[in-house]
Image 1 (cartoon, rainbow, N blue to C red):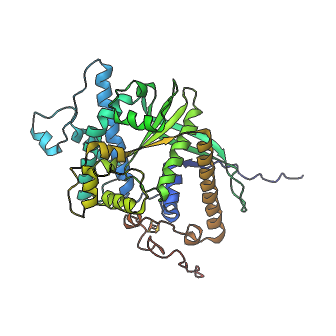
Image 2: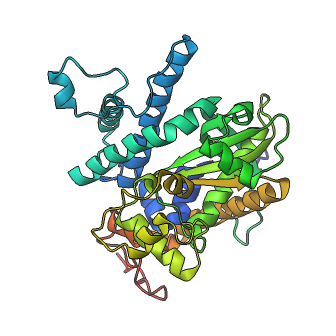
Image 3: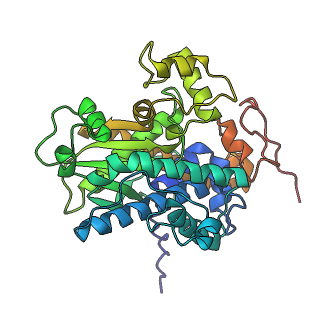
Length: 393
Ligand code: SF4
């Protein structure tokens, strides 16, 4: 009897847009260690801040929206943000206390083994989320049509010189916020509306805008994160437009939350961008913001920067077109091809450091990385380093 040859298993690997593809672009070795092991990273600091921020903003919005749905007027901003100890001892705390929302999210993350790296990082996260709710909320909350929208799609993997394990891959993500006609109804002084109209002056009658929060500073235009943010929004637009209830997506907004309370990292990057001509959002020449930025030295206060300037730095509007979507999809397809080639290389050579050679260029990421103690090339080490060949057992 002739036996049939066993067909190779049909694999369609699933990639999260942010958790996999952007993580791989940040550093392929870090990505491999985080994803090839069942152990969660011991100090997932970036993950913690991102999730803390998303969760707290979501809770604050839901509170605001629930009141509105019931026909009640939500409390005016700014909302208080108090310590848990104070609330426990005071009968006067308010239901819209941002500290309460943040505590709930922090506890939920702790249950999952995710904690802030230090007390200072936690305090800073609380400050940032307070400012985000109070300064962004009045402009963003009235525009929101839905939140936490899951999107998913399938794409072909581009041809490779290696024999890959798959022909197609699945890509998925969660869109933080969708807004549509509400945007055109927003008041003229709504800063988000103004920013979108600057980039898309001729909005069609029906449309959608995708919003994504970033727990990060605004990248410089010559940093890879600048382009990668664009790819992410374009890919979300492609995924969203394939859903039955979707309208045409005309733009995406990335909100760089750290720009609302600029610290040393944000100010240093802004000044670097000004001197190299690599930032797209500058203070108006001769304005008070301009003077503060030019005079700034480490340790100086930035609280005098105007809200309008900080919001303009935080809000980045990205126009969507079929051409820009195609470019982003092709770029991410190519990233998947590279990941799949690294999977094959590891299976063939049995050397993780060779197959997933570290490529992070961002020193802040390396400082917070769990694997920096044995990483052969943290950021700052010349790219032409040599990895030692594996020794025979
Ligand atoms: S230390 Fe930097 S280069 Fe090395 S694995 Fe971590 S993130 Fe990558």
